[in-house]
Image (cartoon, rainbow, N blue to C red; front, side, top):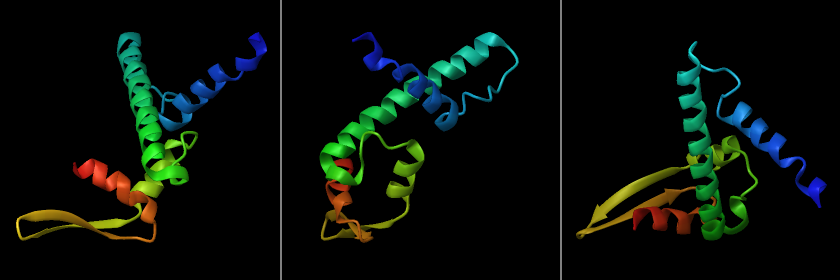
Length: 109
């Protein structure tokens, strides 16, 4: 039972080092670097919560196990235009991925 979760710590460290740039700390002082690592860990938790929510809204288009680069390319690589007409605001999506429509509607609400 103990060995079932043996790779979890290494996976978290790998994600922090590669995705959140904890491998190259920006300051010379240890307290400043500690604040940087804590901010990176908090942002990692926020991104994980967003991935879970996006997975619920979009289905298999955004999976909880995706790395942050994959999510950025899936969410940023399309254009959206805000259209204001007759006192209503809506988004016109110029992309082929119709899975993103519920996520954009959630962000607009």
